[in-house]
Length: 356
Ligand code: SF4
Image (cartoon, rainbow, N blue to C red; front, side):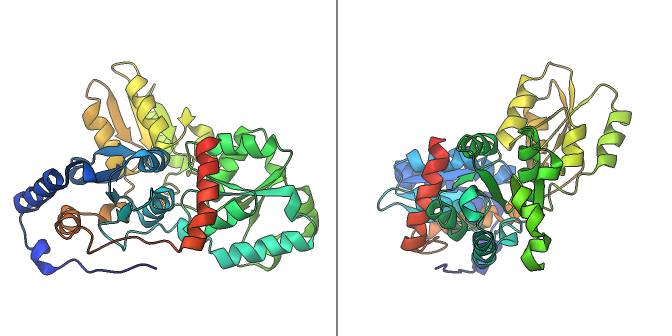
């Protein structure tokens, strides 16, 4: 159940200084009872107040370890849901703008996934597959994986999740990001002929029985519009314009873009890549623009440029007005809830992810 609260005009009319004043005073009033988590894709104005920043894997882990009574998650809805699922008894989680969702997560609904799983079952194949859902999915999808011997992964842990499944001699049904699924499978030496894409809007996923019998990895037809904006032409153009540059991208980019890059990995990987690079290097980064701009500011001795300007409008929805309001009315607005039965199954899958 989700309560939807609307930002009152009073906060919209405040100056930046007034909003920052509220946030600072509430942070000191609540002290260790409050923890603000900020995803790397958040605006600097929000990151300034984060007690912890990270990618979705780091924040899920941090959220499960802290004792704060109130967690204010500056990210998108599925992240806050995971924080509720992994939270301790009595902990409450808030999302400053309840409208901050993730179009990638919305590509796979639990009903569509259950239909697909039943079809595999009817072919006698479901037992041969392990369902793995990307963190960018609803709690119901995570619960489905928990209940069917599967797990969750983030872009940081996708390779480990694939190892874990293949070591059990299983095949993988991966959702909802086609590109992360394909890129991870290819990096595990699965040939492209053994990777098939399930389209939930086509009968039987658009696949015939032979293709399904043969597939080692089935990926769901879904994508992140922020990362599929990057094209092969972008990579070719920057290589021509910045001779000797290195190009690193997020694995939600298409396999064609990933194949041309010098490296690919999670936002944490991209951050480390930039920080570890030699002074004077030019690194072109293919991920969300707020993150790239911050990396550029923090690594002035290197030249850090975006592969193209690509902003996540949902991450961008969280403003200082939303944060000030949520803290000012802490406990009264923007709380995220997960149905206890769904939370139980999702917890199994998320804890499996953290232990793999
Ligand atoms: S960057 Fe892509 S995957 Fe991440 S929250 Fe935005 S739309 Fe979703």
